[in-house]
Length: 425
Image (cartoon, rainbow, N blue to C red):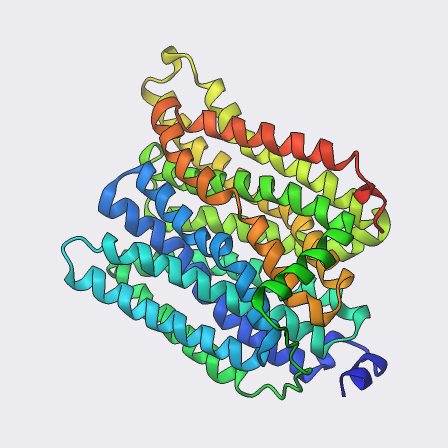
């Protein structure tokens, strides 16, 4: 049946009913994720007013990718991906209810929120790993890049709408109430995914997990382009995550923005990503995947500098009095919004290039393990970078962190330009 799907190429990706089901399921998951992503750091800030604690919380969220992604990839290859995805959604719903109860009833809910954040991201990664395999299964090779771009468009559309809606909800309700809303969205995703008629390929069986991991490593390392891309993604994922969480801290501590104003900032990020996701496949056809990946990584780094450049214009204390002081803070919000928009609009090109190349370069029977291994490596430096960024900001200021992110990302782009990745079409 899978071979028939690959031969019968539909005139449009939207003619595939199974892709439409996966897309609509992803809608509920993505909407819930965007609300959760905004609510959690704001809740931590409300409880602690600490950049260090915000950095630690964000670091804990990425530990599952470091500790479990390798094994999740093997498990996904061994089980029915549809059933696996539904189990991941059930796990997330349970974690969200636990988070709500902790904030509602405990004097110090952080003791529960930290492990819940870990579990939330572990289940989330398990769901997304299986989703990639399902897309590989139900769509022909020629539509893989289009499917990746359309999924990215969905996530960026909801990144535009979700933060604004959740920011408004946070003004009307206690922060922890949104956990129940997110759980409801995941419940809708569960029932939507249940409609999928999924003809699973025969699960890969190995004598042990270690044997499966060894084969996955061999397949990955044999593709030198993907290996070089992976090394660079380890850096750019860390710089992007540090910029995101410390920009949120900057918006609350220095610009003194409200929850909904922070939502506007992240919505600007969604708008930028939405524009990029609808043009990425066209730009790739013109310049090639490798060139687009390298250039987008370098250009994205410029967005990290915009808040720094704005502050330098107001560095003299003589200009920070009265009217000009108000102008400084008001313009600071707009500059930060522009920065979010730029980083997302340009950064989505590199993300789509990375996901598309991985999707196209490996067979379905290897994709779960390769995605697991690369997923682990992609996030390898993030917990350390995020945890350390809070202390860096406390010691030297947030602008130092932004400059460091810019410098490391540009260096990574220049190194990638020296490899054969630049020749990928």
